[in-house]
Amino acid sequence: MDARALKIEAARAALGHVRDGMRLGIGTGSTAEEFVRLLAEKVAAGMKIVGVPTSERTAALCRELGVPLSTLEETPELDLTIDGADEVDGKLALIKGGGGALLREKIVAAASSRMIVIADESKLVETLGRFPLPIEVNRFGLGATRLAIARAADAAGLSGPLTLRMTNGEPFVTDGGHFIIDASFGRIPNPRALSNGLHAVPGVVEHGLFLGLADVAIIAGADGIRTVHAAS
Ligand SMILES: O=C(CO)[C@H](O)[C@H](O)COP(=O)(O)O
Image 1 (tube, protein in one colour):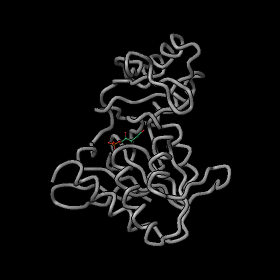
Image 2 (tube, rainbow, N blue to C red):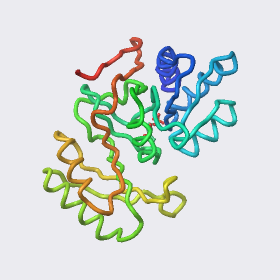
Image 3 (cartoon, rainbow, N blue to C red):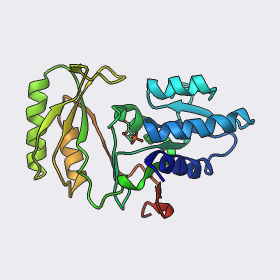
Image 4 (cartoon, helix red, strand yellow):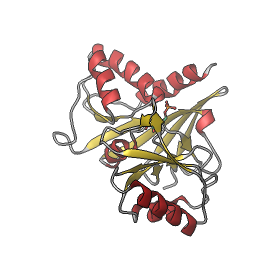
């Protein structure tokens, strides 16, 4: 099975958790898009849900496919968010933000009673950090923020290149109008310490460590679907 087929399998399994009447957070990325396509089929067949998208990209796909949308202003509490991830560890700590939507993804996940992560098995890791950690930063004071991030990482015992994300020769700009620094720290044995340190940097808007947010991960692999639950 190729990677896309695995993403579809994970998305299909997650769809089994969606019930009529639910208020859904809808993630961003290629795996989340497979979920949107399957969800749209259910909606076309009569399922009543309302979705809050985590990016303009996801919102556009939902509109195109007829998935009804709301906002966190209209619908501030959600029943379930289904989203992809760049890395998932065995305790369901995540790295997200490869698609640049980490801020809205975290706000939506935090507004949800439950979060289900969908991924192919390549995303499952023993320790987070192989994937560079996306850090969303205010455009103002970029040099000072970068230095403060390096110091916060150092205090957590980490170091590595901090690369401003670029697209077509220009800095990548998030839906919120911010920049992203991709931090290649390597293994992150204590994500909580790093998270706390990064949150203390004024120019950091948010980072891609999702800790204590995911309840279930649905991982599709060559041997089938594996469901990982967060320890209660
Ligand atoms: O965090 C994300 C976007 O900000 C995505 O969930 C993450 O990048 C995974 O994407 P994909 O399903 O395309 O591998």
